[in-house]
Length: 190
Image 1 (cartoon, one colour):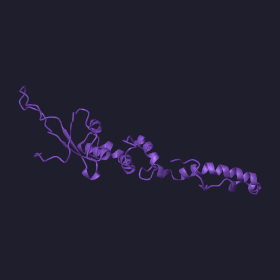
Image 2 (cartoon, rainbow, N blue to C red):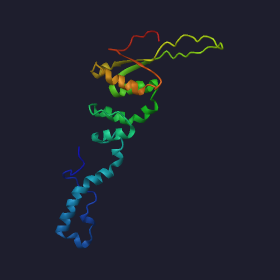
Image 3 (tube, rainbow, N blue to C red):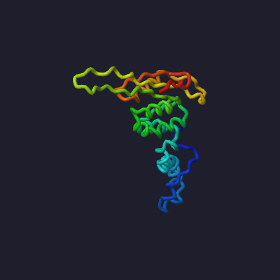
Image 4 (cartoon, one colour):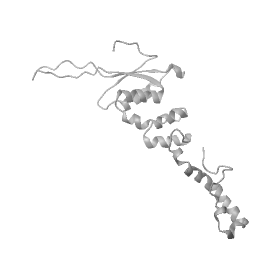
């Protein structure tokens, strides 16, 4: 999409009408300024609609990548436009939840349309006896179970992209294992 030289776009502020009366009837001055109006009309239209350009729900599709760069959002041109708009619109919220279970699940849903569940032992080691032996190691690293949404029609997930998102959204001190499943996990009593 281009906002330059839009054919037939009228200027809301024609220069010829703002010239002194001396030039109002001058054919050359009116033709010259109408050429300037053609060049400036898209600029005025863009400036008049600037708030819409900065709103991801209303911005032209070609502006979404630019807006995404402002807020650090993932933007993949292969995504449908509505998903790209949602990614840009929710970027700040997702940054707030980065490193949490909720943030990881939402990032996978938004970027891939996948469902996810994080299973974490949540154990800690400590001893109430001074200089005593420590208890055994905690139960293990968190496991991120990811499966495709069957309502979207695509039953495959890009394993590399899933691991990339998990690596970006997990806390720095945590190693998360990733398991990609064909469907929702069976409840194992967790």
